[in-house]
Length: 399
Image (cartoon, rainbow, N blue to C red; front, side, top):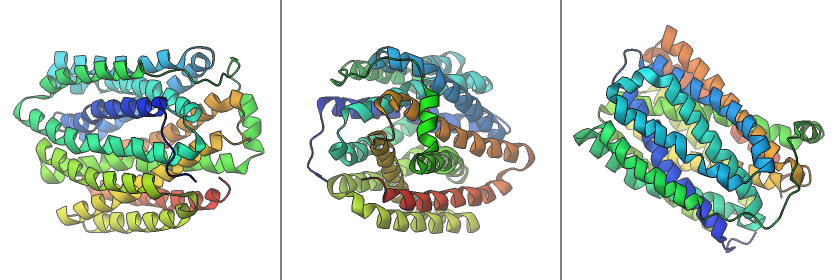
């Protein structure tokens, strides 16, 4: 693999768009969860309802967008992703603390935002980023997001602490405007695919005869359950529970992001496919051991240890699984006319995993509480183990 492959203008623009998306997502995801926790009586139930409505709408929106992406302009669809974020900010400004009673409408808007961002992001990345540049693109995109998370959480936490959520929501409207401008810098890919309607039946036939795709989609369900699902939300809740203020939430999020930045830089610079299996083994073992220690000995020290390990391990595991998703889309088993369906189904599998995870979290909120929450993490740990095992199994077939 050519680790010195250059990124195109479109690839750099996609990284910039994703960076700005994550600034808004930090506020509307992490800090909004903290906001809800401080203004409702049963925070576990409220957050579970928020995320379930979020993911239900997200999966519906994914399938609704397929026809538009196949027959229309992907960049125009991409621009629409800014609108739900802006409406969420306006709701926080207008409703103040009363917005916590509007968790279902907020969840619907967040689901629409993510569908409008991720599906065009993945389909365009699959089209405009060359295979030899994919490791660099994936790791650098994550690295730039991490750099944002070094600065943004402390600033967000600081201004929320001394000002209010409403004032910060107003500032985030400027970020939404910048995101819109960066999306406008994208150029349509030179390679043209014949426009046609959705063809999930054709993709299904490919999946039936290709075990590689089936295992890849199973990994995405497990990712939705754990690393891209309830795991980060539960840890955020524990951060607020243990450290009490949004300033500390911002400080610790920033500290852990710094190790992820270094990991992404090194992986993007030197990572090669032959290194993926040992990286997966070490990362999975390290993540599971640190999380088990946190589950069975909850303290500030074990929390910090887990987050330091996970900032490295999750970065590596998620980068490798995402590279595999992109590289499989370039193989002959996924035809050009089925690429949008492929990425749609991938996102659907991820969302199904998240719905499973947050459905379980909702049950804990109704019938259990914080006493049961850490035991729920054991289930998430087993999902991570399965991700590592399956990724090692399929990696040999992805060249």
